Length: 99
Image (cartoon, rainbow, N blue to C red; front, side, top):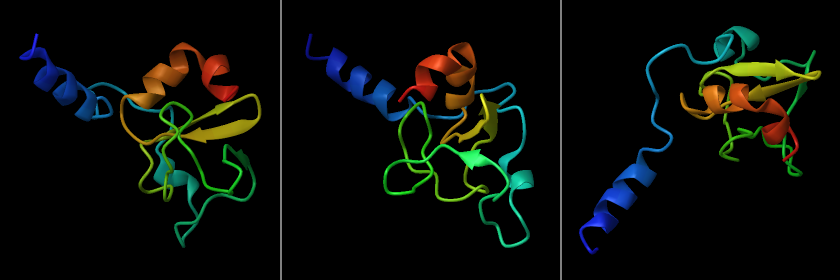
């Protein structure tokens, strides 16, 4: 049983690694203005501190350029922290949008 722990931690460490295939529906960098700031014409999913969060992993997304894409759902834009998250969100957007 001891030999399974390293595999568990290895899997956990790479849980948010980019996967092959299409990411989000749109490249996040296209949503930024020339200064690289968040768009002001859409509602963006944020926490109580005003930080943009990935709805799947609850990780802070620092800028549109650092996001791994975004998806719009029910009038709100959701940015993602890694390549795994857009697919998970697309499978069940209502689940992640409720967080």
